[in-house]
Length: 164
Image (tube, rainbow, N blue to C red):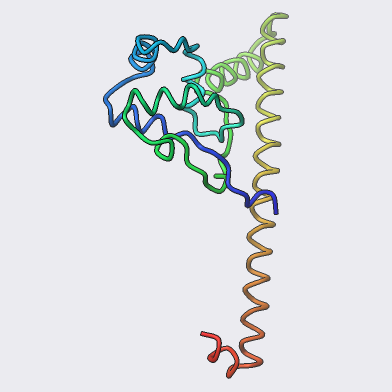
């Protein structure tokens, strides 16, 4: 099953905490070491999402600058189910627009903004629903496998004891 394959996650936030650095500090150190890195590339390594692509020059420089091994920067783990949501600012604005819409007629710009935020919320909800369905299916399949194993052990108790 593809969902069970490990994916790469960045451990840069933990390294920065350990070294008492922020992204700006790291960027300056990398620049001083002769590596001109776009700060956005460093910020991408601070998210909780799996890494899709990685610049090995940047990882090597982080290892050298922070005196860590590559295994400390990049970890391979099974994907973590994460529910997506609007940012706090987006949710607050959506709430404001919905309240205003129930009290008065919105301007054309407000209606466009409401439509955009509503669509984004809908897309996030659908993605979360797909992820939850996938997790539930995986859980049910695991339970089914476990039940099948338990039934086989119950049918052949001597074999079950012999294999332990």
